[in-house]
Structure formats: structure tokens, C-alpha cells
Image 1 (cartoon, protein in one colour):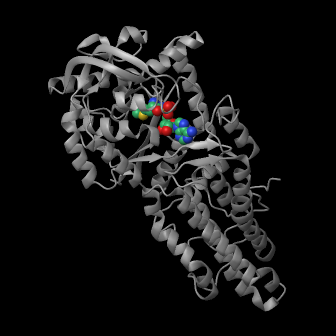
Image 2 (cartoon, protein in one colour; image 1 turned 90 degrees about the vertical axis):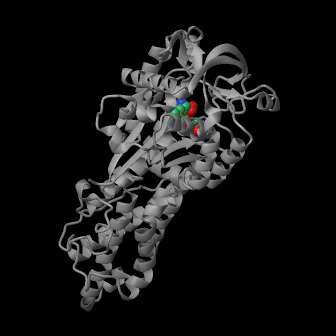
Length: 523
Ligand code: MSP
């Protein structure tokens, strides 16, 4: 059987419409899923929605609706956005689904059996926007306001069930120390380690369900309490697969895909993923995910996104950008503009610059001139080169950028170095454009004895365009396929296997079709 690859996004709250932050993680996950599929791997890509918790209950109250109705309507919007952005998820889990609720209760039952849960009293501060407990120290430091939203913290004082989190902390520290790739980027890993070393108490994992208008997964041992929304939410990564370890009927997926290869998340929710989640898995005696990668946050036009400032990149804004440019350009920009892991700023100006400089002038232009010249000088048929390998000036210009892609693409994808990966593709297209400028096939065309030479040049160009578009397919699936169709290559021929990315795969004699303007310039 082929190697498997399991990638997840966070499951998103349904209190409001999707925005650029949700799109960002989901596009990144989609790129990973598509890359691995093109490498021939058996991929499972999961996304979904996080529908319980006080945040949703309050939003529903404010909108004069029920949490269930609110969730249903917002889920439609998420699904619409994923369709617009060409997201290829294999499943979409909603925490209100029965398959999920049933399995969350199984998880709690198992933890109860193992004496990992006890009854106690929670007294302290809570950030309802983040659904997060806040220590007295941090609360005081932030003036009793949320560090994320700035909204006042709420004082909670109630009986609740606790997970023996503290007992797992030493083991967790050891695990993180001995697994370099468990938390990425490294700076985030260090942050988590130093916070863990300061000590961590047990975790309250239940709420009085009455305060949540009855909306939540009831604790199986105490129906007056519902499971804390983060425990409920984190479990999605296994409930979507089925959980044979906790007595669930074997459905084939869990043993095939768990542990996840990578959980992609934003930096604000790393603590939950890097501490609560692995501790729970240890308590359940299940293997831990390979990597948890925390990406940075987007600001918009230089400022923190906010609806009142009018710079919020909402669903509607994204839709407009996709209309003005194309969905693939949006996907491209988000992963190209800043290294994954760092914060970035979204501005329409920067977007247009990258679009014109990189997509239109570099990649698009290379495709268009290649197809035009093959049309003009070889009657639209890919010519036969003097040899099926790069030598002489061809090697001088193109060997290095091509080798770099062939040898480093896998590592760059594994490390989520999306921007570097795209830069490496651009190095190849830029080098090919320069190669054309240097070899001047359009000038040689006036000399009748140069046919063979032009054949080699244009075959080489066609191959470089093919390779660039193959490598770009995970990022821009539609545009890459559209470009490749002009070279006579159909969607099902696109792959990134070692064989497919070798020079010399495109067959002489195949028909190209033009003219083509893949990324029309914008003014
Ligand atoms: N429901 C939880 C996740 C549970 S996962 C088991 C949640 N949902 S969320 O809808 O609030 O946020 C989802 C993601 O959006 C987070 O990863 C967060 O980092 C990301 N972003 C929210 N605003 C963002 C930006 N401005 N920029 C980039 N990502 C941002 O948290």
C-alpha cells in the first residue's frame, strides 16, 4: 500500500462568517494534501466546524436564533468558501454530528475508567471569545481583558470535572524535547517548553449545560454537565476517523490514517494543541501526531483586521478578489507573501504587484511565448530536441534551478516552506525567460540552417513550463491545469513522482494550442 498522509485544519467556530484567517490555514492544508496526492500518497484531508461552547451560544442569542440554526447557516458559508477556493478536503466534520458526539462520550468514558477525571470546583477567569481559562496572573497582567479580543474576562465559579493534566506534563516535556518536529516553528516550540516548565495545573473539562442553553456534548457520567468545548473540539481529529482503541467499531480509517502527519493551526491556539491534545492522547494511550505547525496572523492594509476599521477581509472581500483576479491567485498570494509561521500583511497593492510581476510577467509570459513560438516555427507541434538531456547553454541556465526543485521540493513541503518552494519555481521560470532572451530563437528563426537549434531551445522551454506548472499544481490547481492543457497535457497526466519531474518527459510531436494568456496583466 502507498504511504499515507493525514492533514487537518482547526475546526472553525460558527459564530460568524468565515474570513481570511480560516482561508489561510485551509489553503495551506489543501496545498499539502494536493502535493502528497501528486506524489502518489494515500491522503486524508480533514476540516470542519466547532459548533459548541459559550461563544456560539451567545452569538445565537444575539442573533435571536438557536445555536443549531446558526451553525447550519454558517456551515453553508464555510462550504461555499471552500468550493470557491477549490479546497479538496476528504471529509467535513461538524461537532454537532452524532458520529462525533458519540465518540467524544466514548473518550470521556475511557478517561473516567482510567481515573483520569475527577470532580472538583473551578474558580477563576475565562476568556469567552477564545473559550480559554486564564490564570489569575495573566488576567491581572492584561487588565482582566482578553489578550486576543480585548473583551472583558468573565469570572467562573462552578463545580466541574477535571482532567489530571498535571500528571502528564513531565512526560510531555520529555516528548517535546526529544521530538524536534513535534511543534513547529522552533520559536513556538521553545515558547511552549518554557511555559510548561513553569508548571501546569489540572484542566476543568466540563461546564454546566444549563448555562449553555443545553448546547453541548453531555458528560456521559453527569448529564447536567457538558464537555468543555476544547476537549470536544480537539477530539475531532480522531472522531472523524472512528476510534477502535476506545471500543468503536472498526471502520478502517483510524488504523489507516492515525496518527495525523500534521495539524495546521494558528499561533493563538497552539497551547491547546501542543499541551491539552497530546496529554489527552497519552491518557488514551494513543500515538501523538507527527507535527503541529502554528502559522502567523494576517493584518490588513497595515492594521489589525476589524469590521469597524473597514479592513476586514471577509468572505465577500475574498469573493471580490477572486472575481477581479482568480481564486488561484488568492491561494498563491497567501502562501507566497510571507513565510508560513510569520505574521503577514495583506494589501491589495502587494497583491497586484505579485500578480503582475510573478504570475503575469514571469510564469504567464513564459508559457505564452513558448506556445507562440512553437505555433509559429513548428506548426504547433512540440519539436524534437537534439538530445533528451540538458547540455551546453541549456545546462548552464537551467540545471541548477531544476535540480533544486527536484531535490528540495519534498523537504520544503514537509517544513511548510511554501514561500521558498514558490520562489524555487520562480527561479526556474525566470531562468528560462533569460535563457530565451539569451538564445534568441526568434532571431535564429530567420536563418534556415538553425531549425535544429531552435527545436532544442523550444523543446527545452516547453519542458521547463511543464515542470514549473507541475510543481505549481498544488498551489494553483486550475491555472496550472489550464496552462498545461495548452501544452497538450491533460489533468490526469499531472503528477509529481520522481519520474514525472525528470527532464525530457514531454513527447515531441504533441500539439500545443495558443494564444494563451493565463494571467492577464492588471492595471
Ligand atoms: N474552534 C477553534 C479551533 C478548534 S481546533 C480543534 C478556533 N476557531 S476559530 O474559528 O476562531 O479560528 C480558527 C483559526 O483561524 C485559528 O487557527 C486562528 O489562528 C485563525 N485566525 C483567526 N484570525 C486570523 C488572522 N487574522 N490571520 C491568520 N489566521 C487567523 O480557534
